[in-house]
Image (cartoon, rainbow, N blue to C red; front, side, top):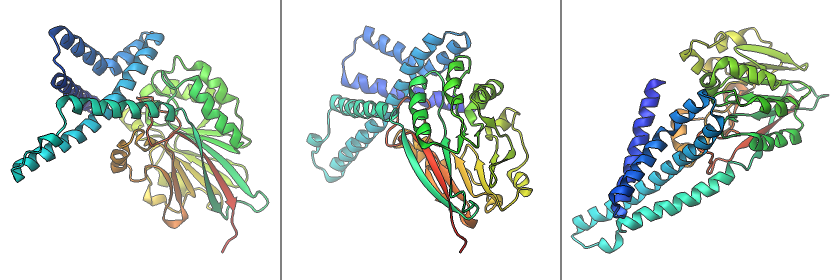
Length: 381
């Protein structure tokens, strides 16, 4: 974790230095403005740490304000740098081309000021759109056929929420929109596949009520994500249970007459010495094969040893990158980064893009979702 933080702050500081040099190249800043710019950037680089310190000392209003500003800025920085890097490549290509061809291509190379303002305009447009996209919760409908659903039952509706990240930024407003989609679906089962909470839990008490008010006939089940461990596992579990969920940690539960739900801890728990439960292979070894088996697992990683032992794995974690083009980065680490995947031996995987946001309150080309899975009866061939 410490290595991750050191790497993050090194890269984040480097991006700020890049932006600082871009601004200095575009404008003739005096000493006073330069100092103000440096101080502002220093505060923004430190914002993630300052937010957590403010939370720890119960400065909730300040922490919420700083998190909104600081994490929005984080998204702006990444968007600006990506577009600016592309323009730099364009400038470099024409500069090199002019040298190789011995031609004067300077008229095709934008000035330093223009190369600053083009990314600013692009970033402003994308960030503004992304702010509204993050609040536009959509329902994604998935149909799974199974011979394990009795003919007389017909179908089973499972609703999945994932990566809500309730905390300083995702609050009542977005939770209300998420739950509106959940209620419309009239689920038989509601599941949360990790990262329901984000950061300290002290200020989330009132958010458990709206979740608790939803009572599907076959129950609500949840598993831990990495952020449950970051937030403080005991407090996170207490909140999830107060919200009415049964937390599955390396265990299986039989619900209805034909469904088994298995839930496993997020691997992050191992780093904290808090991971619970046997291996997935051991969990599935004693389960009846004739029941429709649903596996809840935060990261979209498939254990090949249990293929054919589960019917559907529900996962999240990736956010599909949350902000394009970071979906390409997430796909490097998680090849199954979003949507439905049919696996060998009649198993399937569905990866949610997530219902909330982490860090920047922005989504771009990765809209938030509530997933409605309809499992319908299928005759044997």
